[in-house]
Length: 283
Image (cartoon, rainbow, N blue to C red; front, side):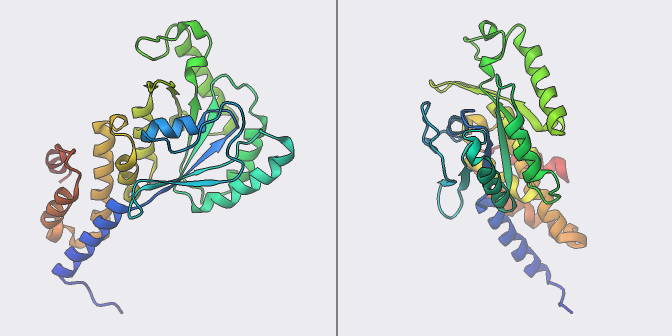
């Protein structure tokens, strides 16, 4: 029978746990059809040329593990061949997705806004995740939303949908929800331009934070381009750390929480100026 931890030992273990969460390296799979802009999406989220872009040919025929950030933290993006690129490789790529899924912390399944044929993606999704109860969190990202009909309604000045596009985006998301059997809360429509403009990326990061387990939320906000991380996302990430250590401490929580506050605040990025106020609201 294990001997109960002393107060000092528990605080020490909690400090180690916080350090692990602050430095955790998540692995994110970017799945979907070829030509949907997976690489462009990743580059826009993280603000770096993290994946080679090619408009001419499918440039990711094998899974590429791309480390963003340092080796002691960072995030690993697993960029995989696009489903539907070549019917002769469909089974091979589906098997690849299936083999990768168990080691992923999150899957971003991408679908192009003007793509009406989901057959290959739907077949692959059902094969990979249909009967898998241990699947990682999965978010569906509708890319190139600026190509939604009527294309001329797109507000180029504000870089967001306009006119009939808003209704058509909702129809698209509902259609994906119905066909793939997922909640619309797991679906988000985005757009990124070659000039660096973006639509709905902050909302995407918020959705990722919401979907990830408590101990892994912070890692995504740490690596995302800072302008894509809203205060709501930062708060959610810090709350994840708070809830995780609170659960770890169990019945001893009240005896260590004041020390935990100091450790969390000291370990938080300087950019988070509101953390003290947030923590007060969580007591």
